[in-house]
Each structure stands twice: as C-alpha cells, then as structure tokens.
Length: 243
Image 1 (cartoon, rainbow, N blue to C red):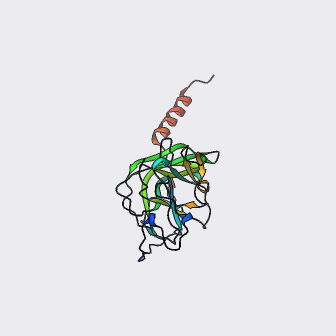
Image 2: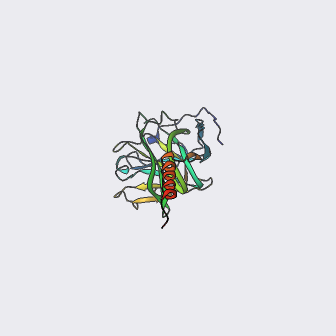
Image 3: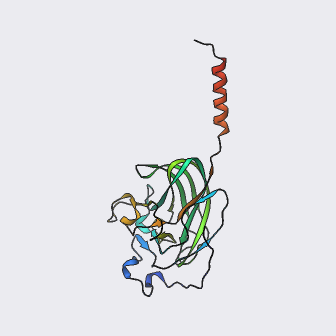
C-alpha cells in the first residue's frame, strides 16, 4: 500500500524553524506538546507479513509528540487510533510511522491494544512493553516501524503507544496526515497543561489529523485449554444422570 521512496532532503534544526513555515505550526522546544514543521513527508517502509495490513497510507504533512510534563502516569501522553474488526481477529503487529529531528538516542516505548468503550480506549487487551523501535528517519522523511504484539479483538478497538521519556525532550514524533481519509485519532492529556485532560481528539491539542499508527490482523487462534475444558464439561453432562 505504500512506497519506499527516498529523497535528498535535508532538515533544518527544529528549534530554528523552517523557511516558509509559519511559527504557529511549530511549538516551542520546552512546550509539553510539540509539532513538526509542515512538509510533504517521504515514507520509508519496513515490510511486515504476519497478517492483513490495516492502517495509514504514506502521505504525511507533520507529526505530533508529547514531552516533559506531557508524559506521566495513567497513560498520559499516549496516542491511539481506532479500528474495527469484522468478527474476531488477532492483532499480530502494531506499526508506528514516526520521524525524528536528531534527538533519538535509544528511548523506548510501550505499545498497546485497547478495547473501546464510549468511543475511547478502555481495557488493555495486549501490551508490548519497553520496546526499542530502532533508529527512525529524519523529518521530512518518516519511518514505518513494526512491533510484534498479539491480542485478540472483536468489533471496535484501539492501537497506540506511550513514550517512556518522562521529563525528557521527545525523541521522535508520530506522523500525522492532515488531509487524508479520517480515522479516529486520540491522545491522553495529562492534567494541568491547559487542555482538557483525559482522552481527547488530537485536534484539541494540535490539528485534526489521522495518526500514523497501524496494525496487521489475522484469525484469532482457538485456545486449546478452553477447548479441552469445554469438552470435559460436555462429557460431564453426558455422563450425568437425568433429573
């Protein structure tokens, strides 16, 4: 679905700005909510293969990140995108389309699959904790990084991540498509930052966008333990005397 096109782009220092980009599109370096300068990004894709691919394409214009006080307990600073499974399936890979500006040096993330309740992420269905996704591309290139994570889903669910750089500058940004097909994209806002707290659409903090978070989906395997227990239960009923 995406192309692996490389280009001779050179990105200027983020804190100095980019020629032709309005200052309003770039947050200050110390702001807990930061954004990449507007550009036509080039996606570098790393192929997967565990299941059917669902997710964004390759057209991105910016990226969002939380840093410093924006990341905290209770999943504050997380990003999530909603999907819907037709019947029961298993997420086998979560992908992040991300870009850096030169600050990445081994920072790690936690990736999640959540159930959906009242239109926001709810119960955790699966997690891949403390993951190093590898070195990503320099903006205005973005890299697609796939991480194995198994979780069975049915109906609406969410996939996303939280950075593990509490109190630090953001090492990379999740890519954002400002004008492509819309898909519910949310972030969890920490209290006391001047925004409504809790799970919010990304437009509350940045702009309306579809985030670069995708997945691969396959059939959910039958749990042999459950199958055996159900068989045992049926045998017990068959052998029980009628009343």
